[in-house]
Image (tube, rainbow over all chains, first blue to last red; front, side):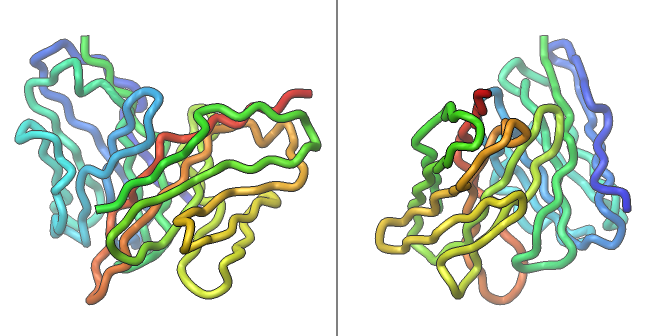
Length: 114
Length: 117
């Protein structure tokens, strides 16, 4: 079956622009996670959704970062007024239920802010 | 809060030789432990996980890992590596939680496994 998909795969933004990154989780997966992976680093947790409810946003680095999942399926991570330090790969993962289920990762969106 | 330390950023190994990738963690609560592999331009793929029970866990592609609570380690091993094992390997932890809900994973910085012919 289809895995987690993300779009766009690559995004170049000028400093100060707003960007929106999309994640399509595996159909029926309840939980959805966003991670940020800087060059040469491991992924870092940003936020977590259970269906449409955002239950944890403790990892969002600033109020310029906003995520939503209005219908409990597709999710969008929005970054306002992008800055160079936002350059990273943004990974989305979904899992079947709540609790300790395997997280399936998408290929990521590589964001470059110039 | 949890943290993960992968002691080696890069490990070169000859093909068919054994390999061990080291992982240590720090946590004030009980954790679940994972190893993920990331091939170039691909998403992370779960290799294996430790939730409870036997401390030796076996995963895909011939990998295994041993949980050592006293040393807070979860080292990954493979007895004989192949060229196709060249990838980035990440160790990760998640706090065990009660009452439902899920926890984001805390990852190490990764170890680049380089297989030399």
